[in-house]
Amino acid sequence: AQKITQTQPGMFVQEKEAVTLDCTYDTSDPSYGLFWYKQPSSGEMIFLIYQGSYDQQNATEGRYSLNFQKARKSANLVISASQLGDSAMYFCAMREGTSNTGKLIFGQGTTLQVKP
Amino acid sequence: GAGVSQTPSNKVTEKGKYVELRCDPISGHTALYWYRQSLGQGPEFLIYFQGTGAADDSGLPNDRFFAVRPEGSVSTLKIQRTERGDSAVYLCASSPGGGLSYEQYFGPGTRLTVT
Image 1 (cartoon, each protein chain N blue to C red):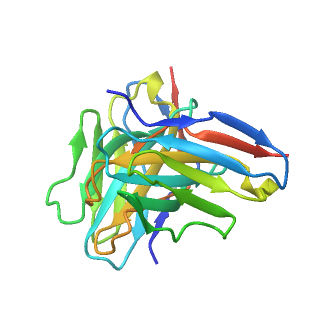
Image 2: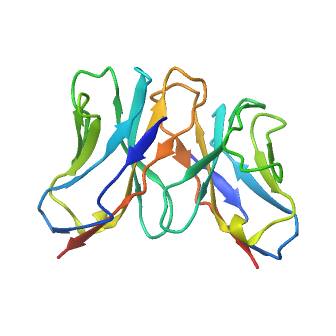
C-alpha cells in the first residue's frame, strides 16, 4: 500500500543555514510523483517542488532541492539559506501514476522553525 | 488570475445537521479534489473529479458524505447528519488535468466545527 513517512515532527534551523526535511515513501507502482508542500500558519498549502520517479536528475526550484534516492525510497527536501518566512509545516506527498486516481497521499508533516 | 476559492471559510453546525461546502476551482482546470485535514495531520483524500464525473471517490468515509460537480466547474461537498468527528478543515484543490506531474492548487479551506 502506498504510504508516506515523515519522521521529524519538529525541526529547528538557524537563519541563513541549510536544513533537510526527511521523507520516505512506499509504493509498488513504478510510475509515481513526489511533491513537497508548505503550509504556513495561515493554512494555505503552497506547492514547492516535484520529482517524477523516472527523472534522472534531482529537482531544484530556487532555494529548494529534492534529494531523491530511489533505491532507498527517500525524497528529502533541502532548503538552503533559511529565512524567517520559511517557518511553517512541510508536507511530503506522493501520487501513483498507473492508477487513474489522481489523489495525493500526504505524510504527517514536519514543523520547521527558523531562528533569527 | 484568481486562485481556488472556498466558501464558507468557517462553518459551525450542530450535530445531526446537514452542511454544504463549496469550491470554485481555477478557471479551465478540469481536475478537482477534496481533502480533509485534521489538526496536526496531513490532508486526507476524499474524492477526485475529472470534469463532471467522480473518477475516484474511495476516500469518502461513509455514505453521509457526497460531492457533486454538475457543470465541470464548481463543486459542492455535502455532509448529512454531521457528527463531532467530522470537525476538520476541508480543502479543495484543482489542477489543469489529471497528469502525474500536475501540481494541485489548494484553496484556503473551510473549517467545519460540529458542536
